[in-house]
Length: 128
Image (tube, rainbow, N blue to C red; front, side, top):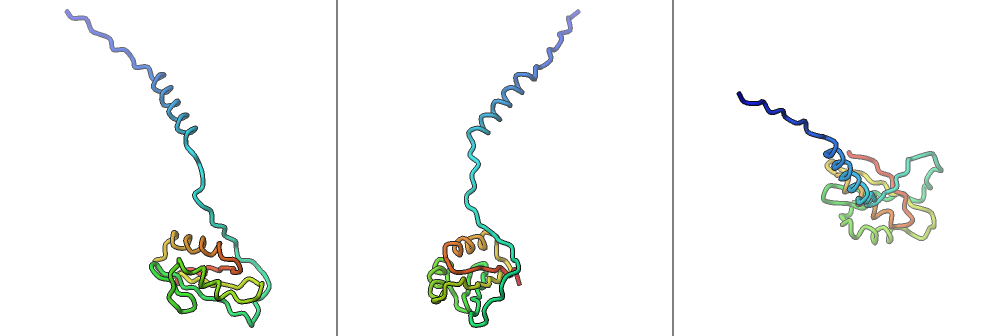
């Protein structure tokens, strides 16, 4: 008669140790940085805009942009806004209307461009 071999139980201790070491290695070698930040401020109460200063209107589409009903490329938006700024030291209002289909990345690109242009306070109206 043949002897029955008893199977040895596998030890999980060494496997857990290896997994823990790998986890520790990847946590210590990873960098947790933010690629970029866009500051968003909530609308609040404030002084009424002056009647003499009309706000600028920017219509943002998935592939196009229009500033005061004139087609414009986002790369040249900073120069166009610098021309529209005027002589006053007050910040001009810029109303941004989003067309359907505008992605969050496209809106973020626009907000990054607007952050680099002083003298404007953008207000995002939403998709229409």
